[in-house]
Length: 97
Image 1 (cartoon, one colour):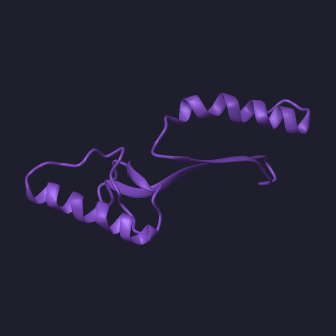
Image 2: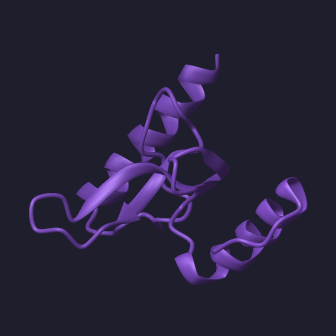
Image 3: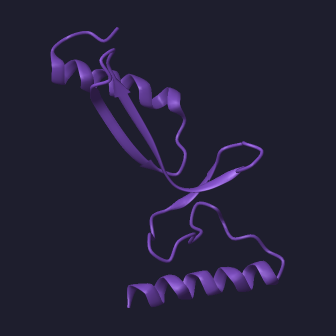
């Protein structure tokens, strides 16, 4: 039943495009299998838009992962850095370099 709802949303979006309107990117259905996937503008020539999630991984000099997050859409990196550093400090008890 879930697939039918997703395919109905995709069909409705197709009708909108044929009518000359563009569906809102924040609510647009881009995957039949993953209803939370969203368009992410990357700005690269070969792939200006990708679909899915935005991961952030913090590691140390030894490449041990200290923190990670996976966000929907494309939040700015700057707002994610301070909370990630705070989580690393709370977990390790040490200051990040």
